[in-house]
Image (cartoon, rainbow, N blue to C red; front, side, top):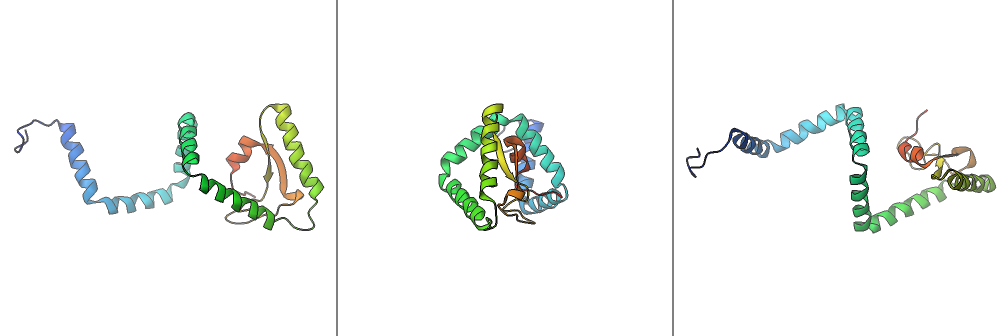
Length: 156
């Protein structure tokens, strides 16, 4: 029974109140500890996130739709950055006909298979470790889901 209010609190309620007060008192230490743990367990966190996204696909899609509607200027800026990177990494000696052929091949495969295909940069245009060129030898046609799962990574 609380001395102030005269109301009985359950053990769970007292524990919850204690935990909340402890967290507030030690918030910075907890954040620092969590940050160190996350740095040491990147693969584990990535695997957990991937499982969660797979199990909550409709929730993710709804959140992404809300985000896109709320921040269209960020999406436009990102697309402009992508176009600029592509232009900067298109060299004069690239074979434009072969590049156009790959995009046409992806379009035809998408129509024939009934699922989207993308033209992927093997070495990403905006990679963290290395950046590739927009040339025919750095392009491949992939299923969209494979290209999107690859994201902006490059593995030898």
